[in-house]
Amino acid sequence: MDALVIIFVAVLGVLLFVQVSADWRNGVFFILAVGFAQDLVRKLVPGEPVAISGAVGVVMLFVWGIGVGRFGGASKAMSLRFQYPSVVRAFVFFAGLVFFQAMITIVNFESIPLAGIGLVAYLSPLPAIWVGWWYCRTERDFRQLALTYVVGVIIVALTVYMSWLGADWAIFKSVGEALVFYGDAGIITMHTGFMRAPEITAWHLGAATCFVIVLATLRPTVMRLLLSLLVIALLVSAAFLTGRRKALATIGLFVGIFAVLLQYSRHRDARKASYALFGVAASAIATLYYIGADLSEATTFQVYAQRGGSTYEDAWDRFYMLGIGSVVSAIDQVGFLGLGAGAVSQGAQHFGGDESIAGAAEGGLGKIIVELGIPGLIVITWVLWIMAKTVRRLLAQMDRVGGEAPIVAFALVAFLVANVFSFVTASQVFGDPFVLILMGIAFGALLAAPRLRSPPQKNEANALTPSGVAGVSRAHQIGQLRY
Image: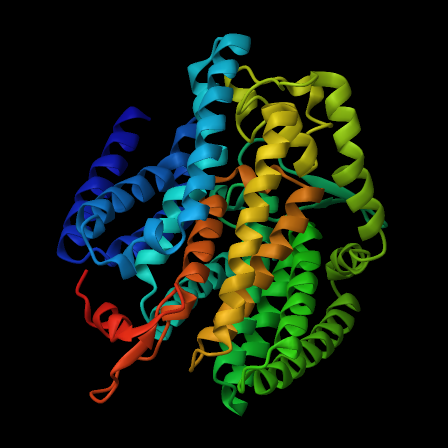
């Protein structure tokens, strides 16, 4: 076991150093590769050590550290602290609170690893925000990043189908005990593919579906829309097979929020994008309906389809009980200060976390109170308020920005808001470092949206910066910058 882990870490370190040294931007794709591969490696190592699932976090810190060295003295246009000072201050204050609560974890549980899990669970998105901000210079950068992620998730979807069709391979089994649900046909397995748990697989399938929809609406053509429908059908059908319904709810929320933002926008391309979104959504629903009806006649897919079909029936009850209702239960059990960061986070059971109150922490608000207490909930609410005000000002600028950037901004807002609602009802998947890093990159890309321009033309003299100032080709300089 030790030799395999050492070899994996050594090869990973050498490849990362070579690639990022040659071009910092390669590091972002390395993050995606490690994020997808780490669970596969963990399944192959005897004992399935939990530390392997944190490999993507180590890679993220390395890429972020190199970025700090390269961009620390860059122009103000590349400085997140200069462009969005209130957001950065809020993040710093929040990080201070999390470190304080990590100390409480050490006092309460006498476990430094448990405190480390808490730090990872709450702070992983922060360096990822900077990475997303630095990486996204042009519209092409966003499309390339989104497309690379979608390709990775398509591979995950194919492994889910292989598992469903009977491939009894070790890499297709869940880490730990296999998860099941009970249907009309008895005990039904939740398929996970080569990811470590169905919950995580479902989240990625849902996220990738959202990004396929975005890519389809950016440059809608008949061929692109048809290809998008096929991919959406592949991803959503695989999401059914995981037995997890929250991904389907997130997709529905994303489409609804995205459509509303497009309809209320005054940007000239928003109406065209809304038509494309409606066409993709309607066609995808029809395609999935006929696929489900056809498969259900001869296969066990009907059981998964029935479970998935109940997603929206009990959505409000689940949101109220696990979201809002968990707050009172959590306060009753842990009091004002909470137990400390990481006490009930994903993986805490391996390092002495308190499993007796895990039920109160299933919802996101309950988890925050259990770990960070009432002060943590207040601080997070304040941080979200600062972020919301910043995003509101950002979206107001987008009507004056040309190209695909406004559509990208609306889509990223819809994606992030949909996941906030998902977190409120079920927090488990948001303890995964890879998921948290992707959320951070998405928010960083959103902050960079006002400068997401097509590669500047020779005669382009002015460009809009995130601060809303039209100046001497600052975006032109960013577009030409070699990282």
